[in-house]
Image 1 (cartoon, rainbow, N blue to C red):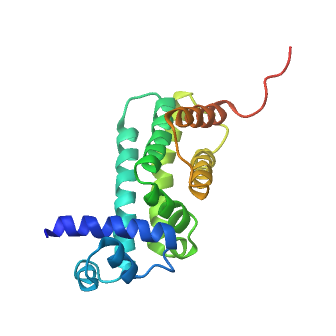
Image 2 (image 1 turned 30 degrees about the horizontal axis):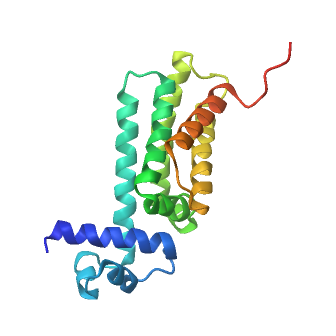
Length: 200
């Protein structure tokens, strides 16, 4: 079996095991069984479960960063960029729910990951990239300039994270209609607030 193919099988098996058992309870033996590969072959490609977990998370970060870098350089309107960020996360949930489950449960809310200097750096980069897009929106006059750009960034990313958490915890499916409602709701509340219009 070719190296790339073997690693792909191992990673896919690890995604399933980590998302169902959690990182702490998962064992390399579980991953080998899920992958239908020998125990020794798993260790041939990945030294331990920490290295395997890091490879999965690193791939996620790279994909997310690439998306944000592309949007940052784009000349599209700020609203379109924000919508694209939400779409990216929703599409990731639909395509690889196990990966999103790991990101939310083990990375976004995982104390061990947060406590490591490298983990903190990963989140700083995420916040900085998103804040660049938010700050551009403020400069363009699309977003309020009287609220700090980092605060707006936390509100925006926090709202997406909460929606994803609810869907993951409930093992919910995401139809196109529901995705559209989520995108419209998040974008509308973020741009215009949740306060009802005053009656005239």
